Amino acid sequence: MRNAFEGKDNGRHGAPADHVDIRRLTPPQLLALGVSQLAYVKSVRVDGEPAFAIHAADGTPMAVAGDQDTAVAAIREHEMIPALVH
Image (spheres, rainbow, N blue to C red):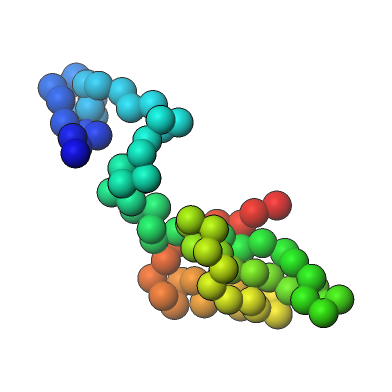
């Protein structure tokens, strides 16, 4: 797989000369960019009560927390980057 940052220096302090259309990245390219380190927090209802679901970047459910702060803390504890879904 070609590194998305290969190419000639364009004078912008090592920025790539080629541009990459992120809408056309393949799943392996996304993983190479660190997407596997993201987790999403989404408000949900569990047994009629509000809760916050934690999903891996690929949508796989990972956990449920009672509040948003706990969900974000759990993600950070596992050295992942939290992203909130509205």
